[in-house]
Image (cartoon, rainbow, N blue to C red; front, side):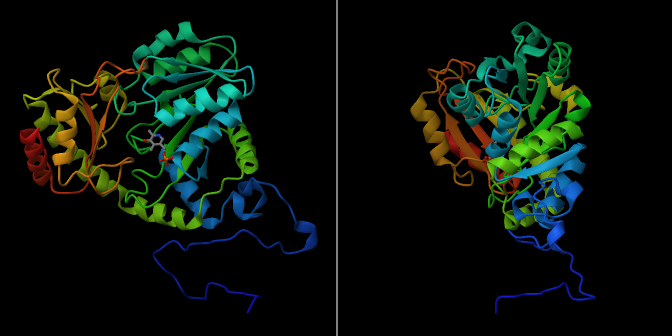
Length: 380
Ligand SMILES: *Cc1c(COP(=O)(O)O)cnc(C)c1O
């Protein structure tokens, strides 16, 4: 009952990628035992560094992002943490945009600060002006474009150029989740390494948590891989197989979502209740010119800002009245979502106060979604 010698039967082929689970990986003989984490070099050694299912997913993300190699992590935030813990040491300084995904900022100011890493926030529109903020010990500059919730598209090439001109070893990391690694070619725009929450468009069905880190060269892969081994947070092969399945339909999902989102964003822009639609493909959106220059498409996550007379109660009422739009964190799945934010008291966010709502456009019929929004606005 214990010893298995299961093999894929001769002649059996399936269209699905098999799920290879495994902690122990067997060696052919005693002398071959090896705990090297770099299975691209050493062959399979241990489940923590990935089974064939994990590495297949890593390979596909790497191909999409045109990087050197990809490491799959157990969540998007895990990918952010891996980058920071692999690249920073006590005494280093890091720059993060004010519009960065909030847990990224919290990791910097709560955990990394405790470990002696100093961080400062910069306005996402800074472009080449980041030069003035670079210090002698600045080791890492984060970009996230567009930024979470407030949606500023950054001049990433200008930031990368300034960071690299600054001196040896200042690296640029990019949260490339919004573009799904597709709409923005980060490495062609000067970025050194990217991460994505595969939880979003790659998974695509709100049923898994995974992340990826993709690097531009071998040296970075060695640095990241070693830290990944020692942090010991492995991605589950079952989740990786769901992500591989998600990738098969990503092109059609993204295409539908792009068209639907643009139509909805334009409809919202014409409404009297709304001051501004923060959708990078619209001229009203901050950094639209950089989106136009650097991106090849737009995703289905964007925000709306109500006019100043909207009270907080009215904004919450709008969200509560929506029926097709559910309320919840994360995005990139088939279900449309709405979340109201309140930036009162925040030093690092544009002055949208309680008037900002982020929408995730899913796969429901576009006209049904517009009808839902119209009713929400009327109730509000
Ligand atoms: C969701 C998200 C993350 C974190 O991903 P998880 O898989 O939920 O940990 C990171 N960055 C951005 C921009 C995100 O939207």
